Length: 198
Length: 198
Image (cartoon, rainbow over all chains, first blue to last red; front, side, top):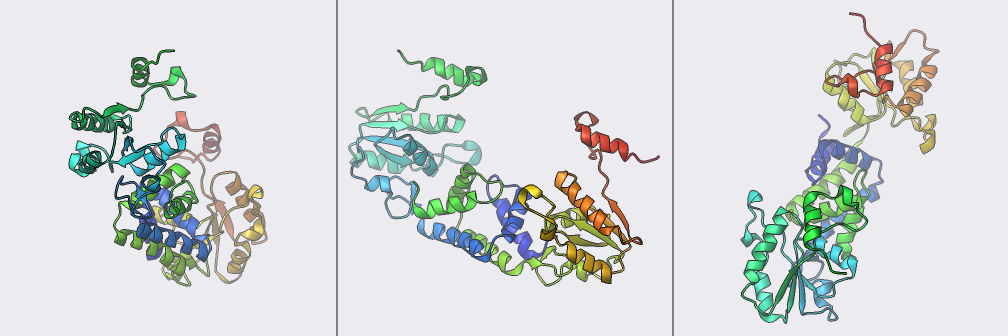
């Protein structure tokens, strides 16, 4: 219904995750009010992102070079490894400043519905790392949901032969600043199970 | 915290209306999974949108040429003119197939808070059109909110000298498929005021 160039841009934005046709239309018309330079900058940011960003050859997080900043940082503790689903989880954990070890990004989770099996995750590469790196502790930090739980269980089974490596998972419980009243029963149940001695 | 190219793309997406930092991050990492061709297509769509889309010289709706499809269409009724705020309103009305006249896009509404006065709207151009076009009826289709009401009132006053032109506004009332129970009191009040004889 719109002219080609307009409809085309709306379609492109509507393909993005979390953006529906109405939002896409709103964004496209917003673009019309931006200067040509600003639109060119946006367009260039997309191209340079795709051209420059790759996956770290060791941990598979998204980065600009062959290796990510964390993998090349010699001050990081090589004996602990944190296994996460996505690159953004790495940065979420980095922001806590609680972890000084290295990461391994799986590139997703086990999700039979989406056809995501173990072969789609960087699990073989995890095993290879364990063969050469002096890892003593593995912290599984997959998301606390059905897929994340399944992925965690699978990895735990995979790691059982490594008897000298301690395997743990991030605590599940009440979010800080939350209200007991508004916590769902599963979260509250896990908080009970994982209660800590004072 | 992220590498430059990643943070840069996240920042670009976070500038878009209705997209927060979390959504921007989600979209950026989604882009990483797209092929280079798909990202190039997106990037090109932005550039060609900005290069090709301008405003119609008659009605100021966004289109690819000098004049929009509606203004060049000789079958449209030249005696009725529908005044809307934005180009997307033109297409919303076109979808109803109820209106066969032409449009005039104001390019916004009167909003003292945002510093949008009458001089920011295409009102002078509207007056010029009335001088040369055989307009007999003007339908004001600004949004049914505070700014739209103010804009409508302003235009009505502006059109008062044109005694041979009938001016009307889109009906305000209950949305079709809606529930009386859930209608807000202002809408319900307007539905009463604008009740139609059976």
